[in-house]
Length: 270
Image (tube, rainbow, N blue to C red):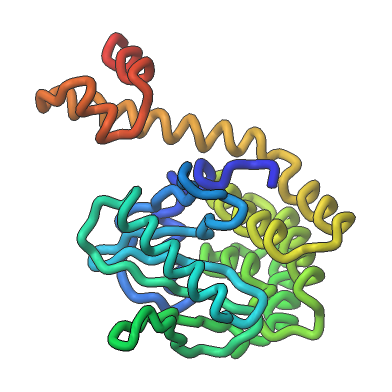
């Protein structure tokens, strides 16, 4: 993947992530989007797709195109342990939710020991006729109709719906459709394109098609990422100023905001 999705999702993830979890039928309000890379593990093997902090729990959201087997269950359990111990300083319970192209709605369990079961909540969009939905979206483009945020996110999730096309083709369809929508806002575009690129990275094994989708959606992702990073920096600057006004030391600010000492000093010097 040619962009850093932690940056892309960090600012707009709270707003559009809320729409996303509502589509999947995960209850609750998102308070924060957490990063998903942890330096102590191999990110290629142990990198959850999205991590949302809700009011009452932490939700790890995974996209999956195969049946959740025992190895997946171990991996998901490992995610929760890493997030609990390393990064997310919260006493909230951690749940793993999987949006699957292969399985219908159900709850699976990983047996940690005879007295302890770790639940994994499987979600499905197979009740939606994806081909019909995409056809309607193209009709809206033809008639220059307005797209809701929910519709835009649904387009990115086409590969999880019922369709006569295979997964790789549906991701290509999502990429082509998103880039044809007129007047797509920059914030929504970065989140939607980020989802499509993530799914492309995970599910599209054909190298030629993978490159094609990446070029369609990611042609201007460098600019989008710079825009997103600027938003992150401005947000961090505001937090640093407020913490400084409350009497936090530089070391305390660095620990709280997770930025460099140089960034803090430059912010306070302005």
